[in-house]
Length: 187
Image 1 (cartoon, helix red, strand yellow):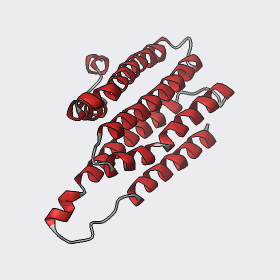
Image 2: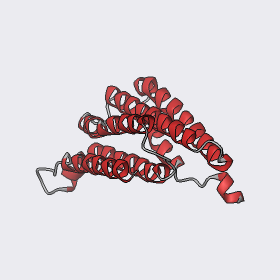
Image 3: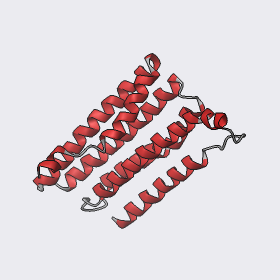
Image 4: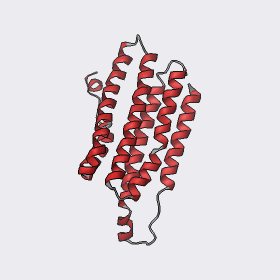
């Protein structure tokens, strides 16, 4: 399992590096010039947060894998594929100054990342059959992932009606992953 985690960590590190290299310094050293790139900085901050959340969850979840079987490898590669597109949609969102189409494309991309994560969680749940606590944990995580997928998909058409509402959804989803798990609080 160490090779799978090391490969994944390397891909995610490259994703974050590409995103930061896409940040362009303003031509002038003025507050107005700095404020002029706020959409790019917002897109970067949001994407960094999303990738960081995925990396933390990926790290914890891979530790529950029993073996690097084909299902695990392919579901992991699918997640990494969709994550690898985050720098592209981040730059598109920032460069477009949060235009409706860019917000919709960004939301669709994050929906696909969630679908891939859901698949990986399904595989890991199968690895833990018989361990009721782990099965329950994965089902809870999948329920949250399914809700996130639905909200990301909702943000796609919503972007053409209200960019602010769509962006609100895109910001609230990662924030929701910082809320404590109710079952953990009761334990």
